[in-house]
Amino acid sequence: MATVEEIARGISQVLANSYDGATDDDGNPIEVGLKREMDVKITDRRVMDGFGICLGGNMMTIDYQGEVSMKELKDKNFETDTEQMLADILKYIKKQYRKITGNSLACKPEGEMRTIVQSTSRVRNWVQAQMTYKIEGMEGVVDAKEGPDGEELLDKAIKNFLGMGKKDFGAKKPQNVTRKKEKSE
Image (cartoon, rainbow, N blue to C red; front, side, top):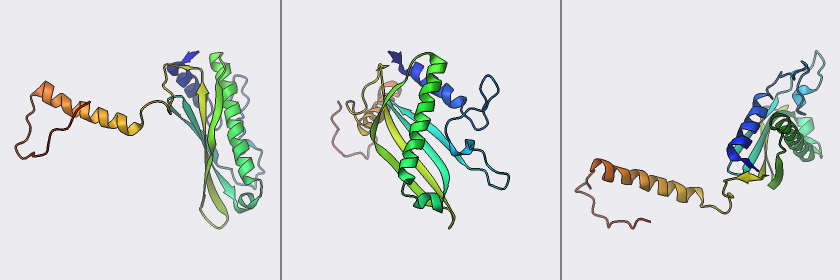
């Protein structure tokens, strides 16, 4: 089992090595599986796409964004192709993670892919897709579904912060406060 810090550092290094135009140790371009890596004719325009990762507890969200033409958007396999793009990115991350850390990264999908398509013109569109994966084998992480929700943690943190002023600095209750005292946990 790996700690959260080790996994986060490994994934961070994968991202650091994955920028557009990156090369491997032999000087060959790194291929993630994005559209921008395909050979384009001189008359074609450059394809703009990329990916990012968000880590939260034991969950990893892969974000993919890219331009799509109206022709690609109307294709019946558009959603399948977008899911395959996310799968290719995950495959690349796992491969590079193993190369960097020597350990494998075990993930399983949580929920379905979320996709937003926005129009920039009559010809071009912008797609944003997200897929969340649960990272298995992390030490010291409370499962996001089992722990307290974010609102409870925020309320507790705010109450603790406000309570510090009273204890540490001798702050007094304003004279115009007339409400009843809240019960603290």
